Image (cartoon, rainbow, N blue to C red; front, side, top):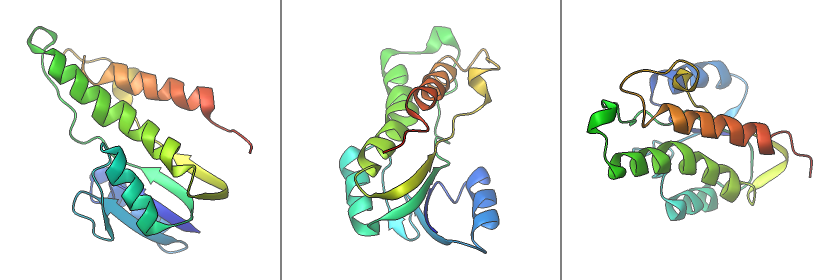
Length: 145
């Protein structure tokens, strides 16, 4: 299978790479590549990535290492907007744009984190977007063409 892995240089992404690379063609995409450079929060950059990669069988998004952790009292509108764009909309756009390039029966694996289930005093700009992404997956996941 041709698998597009975003965030392959992070802790979770490295583990995914180790598990999948022996049996699949992996394409690593991230801000520094190495195979394809992409700003996953920029829809045009995402579209450019898919144009370069072409058709694929699976996408795995292990992204979001840039979450903001601040006390609720210190959070600004910009902090919430940042979390919304980087955690929620970025992964939704991977699916929305990626559907145009996905082979029949392709899969999309999105990642959130435990902050939607285990809140943290400094996670008010993280956990809600994880929960929203969980809801998105439950709402649109397992669709048959």
